[in-house]
Every structure is written in C-alpha cells, then in structure tokens.
Length: 336
Image 1 (cartoon, one colour):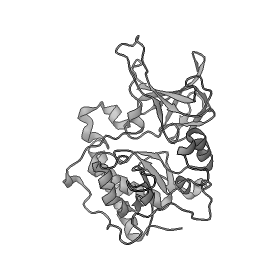
Image 2: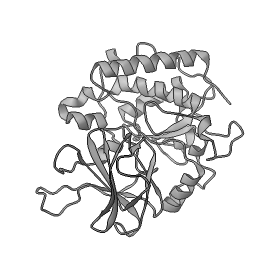
Image 3: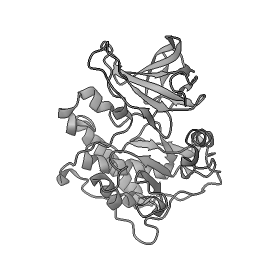
C-alpha cells in the first residue's frame, strides 16, 4: 500500500491544524459570507451528507407565497425502493411513524429538523445518530412513480417554515478570499509523469467495493465519508487549504462506495453508473466534489487544477474536458 511521504505528512498536519483553528477563530468555515445568510443555515450549508449516494434531485423546492397555497416544500431525491437512507450529520431522531398513511422519519441536526418520506425507520425516537448512519429504507413508490424520497427542512425551534434542503447537501457557491489569507506554505507541486494519471486502483489485496471499514479513515472535513487513510489525510489538508482560499471546506458528494452501494446505483442509474465491482469509487481513492469544483472553468476548479497534486490528488485524463467522460467533479488520489 502506498503511503504519503514524510514531508507531505508533516505539511498535512500543519495545514489541518492551522486552518481549522483559523476557521474557529473567525466564527466557523462560513463566516466570510454570513452577512448574506442566516447564521444557523450558514453553519449547516455545504456540510450535510446526501441521503443517498449519487444525489439526483428529480423535483426542486418550490415554496408557496402563503402556507395554505399549493407548492413543493422540499426536494424529491431519486431513490429505489429498499435503498438505504443515511443521516446527513450527527443528530437526534425526532419522529418515526406515519403521517397521512406514509412512513416518515425526522431528525434534529444542528438546530434544523429534516424529514424523509416514505422511509421505513430502522431507528427509534430519541436515538443519537452519526453522519452517514443508516436510519431507514425507502418504503415504496407512493411519492414518485419511479422511486424517490421527499426531504423537508425547517428550523427545529420554530413553527414549520420550510427552507430549501438542496443547499445543505451540495453547493456551488463560494467566495474568493484575499490572497493574503491563503496558506503561507503549500507542499511542493507534484512533478513527473504521474501528474494527471488515474489514481484509483487495487491495493492491500482487497477487491473493489469490499474493503473493510478498519482499513479506511473518516474525512474530518466531510463527516460520513471514508477513504484509504493516506488519501483521507491528504484530502483533509487539501480541503483546509481550499477553505482558506474560498471560505469553506470542500463539499464531498461521493467517496468510497461499497459493492452493495454500487449495485444499488447501477439499478437506479442504469448506463450512467459503473458496473458493480468496477467503480473507481470502490477503491476508496476517489471523490466527487461540489463547491464550484464541479464545473469546468470556475475559480474553484482552476484552483484545484493548480494545487490538488500538492496533496496527492489528481484529475484523471478521462475526466478532463478532452477526455472520454468529462467529469469536473471527479478527483482521485495518487501518492508518490
């Protein structure tokens, strides 16, 4: 198994410690744009794990002008019957039961209530849940003919006044901070023919999607996600440097996908998903990203192109604009 060099490891530790300390000192990773957004929502934005991998919103938020008017007070996320629904962050189960005949789960997460329906719960009211923990499964197709989960969000300490859940899970919104606030020292840029090559591949004798949890490490900057430990350490340092430049950590939409998740995604997305056992995400060395990185030509994507390799991360040739399957959001770890 490849390991990060000692120089990169030292840089990683310094970068993570200094950046997260700086973010706390100025009021959190989103304080730079707090003047435009409610404080609690700013703190939650960009940080929730999606309820299912490969998030696809099939019906958007459409809040009516008056509560009694028709509208859509949440988002519908594509999900197959029987698919697991995961907690977006650490929180407490508020409700498990039926509303108007449909199974519903609601959690309290960071001052917000978030509900999922139709979802048959595997947790109980009052349970503490961690980011990424399975809380239930999609019960039926009563909400969407093709299968989906309706997600609603409102402030937990107020009467229901729904807000758009989409911004809590992923966001393209970033601001450019002054150069003076960028990290004082970044690791040296990668050199040689390895730059830009695909990083995902077999390691440790494991099969794709069948890597034991004990062999992986959580991302500090993206709770609920796991990667091979050297990749996780490099990504956290990369995200910390990104936060100094743009005001918040990198939002991660997908990381390691176990075999069963690959099977579920193939069933839901068809030709748009990799054949189970062949996904680049099955090696725990690949991530799909938001935060503006998921569009070619943005300041965030350009920053990644210039700096990701310093932390062991590359944008593989097939995912680049001239590649066989352009995906600006897909990045892979390649140490050494």
